[in-house]
Image (tube, rainbow, N blue to C red; front, side, top):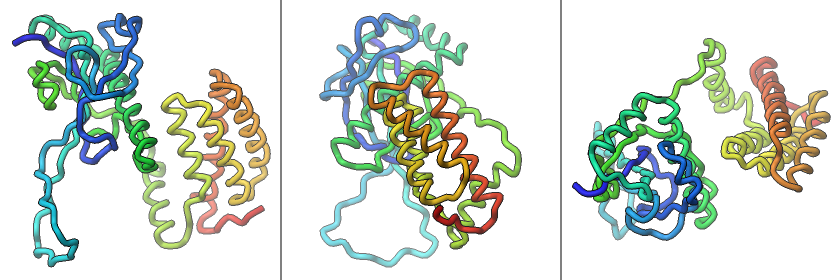
Length: 304
């Protein structure tokens, strides 16, 4: 059978950015020694085979590609035609730098993962970290702002397993676990209805999405991925927008604090206390916007 390689695989029903291929993933010696849980520091680079380094494999399986047309011309849709098959994108992070020499050893390692949610989370976190670095690199290289980082909730399925070099390069495996869907916090019926209410309100023309909301949500993405400096500057920009879009007595104080945090960010990443302060600030503006949208009914905000 030859050498075996552990992997974590994410299955998506949509493209995430990077084109299909095999990408080398840099890892330092100190991090590699932290087995059994992966702990590498990824930097995607040139394509290369599995065996000498960790590898990110992007592949597309499922529906066949449509035949190219010489002319772009609309055609009649068949009545009652079934939706077209959706191809699946497989993003597989392979621990190629730490091969396993026997099936028994690989099976034992997988059983440890099966028995430990912590090990599962470490594998998922590592795979997502590598994939999101690749997505960011693609976004920058392609100048495509719509290539957005992903989370475990975005994946249709998540698997951890092992296989031969040929297996993992083609999205297959010898043995694998399929992880359960991430748990979602329990919420009451009122909270569950809020997103639907927002959609209905905006589409009916009785409300709108504030530009500051788009920017503050971007700050949350940056925080989730450890980019505290970017998050602070996004929050500061969002507060300047909110000051023009909402009339609320707390906005001036929040804007001042956001500006202070952005000032800290110009000198380096935020420390833990500053990150907590930023999270509280974002929670406060969320409460203000929710009160405007859900508690004050259909009234549009007026500029101060």
